[in-house]
Length: 177
Image (spheres, rainbow, N blue to C red):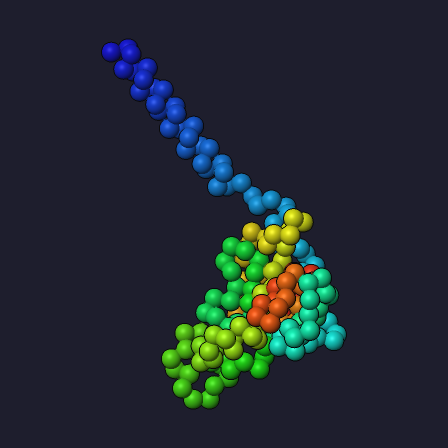
């Protein structure tokens, strides 16, 4: 009987310690390197911005860029758990710009009436990275006005670029009110 009680007590302790470890891991704050930089959202629009399509044609990795566009091109253009957004050229036909037939659109910013190749040709991935060059593990949606459908100007450095894809590591984002 004593042996059984000792076993039950040990199992109980293991369960309590195991549960406590899980709670500690979940409640641990994000690492400082994954905090959104205080200076990310700019008070004024940077000068000499180029729309996504125009900028995309001439960029190469390492170039500094000032990019203008709209957060959109898909239903969820802002990642939930990473500092990544999709910015599209303002010339793309999004549902909010349509005068008729927009009742089928899931969201006003998704450009669902454009074909995927057209959207890809006019889109850029914008990310905010940590000191290791990885996207921050925090979402940007709602941070100081960043939201789907917003007109933005992004400053940063081109991580990769070709005729299909453009990835920019953002150092600043201006959100037009």
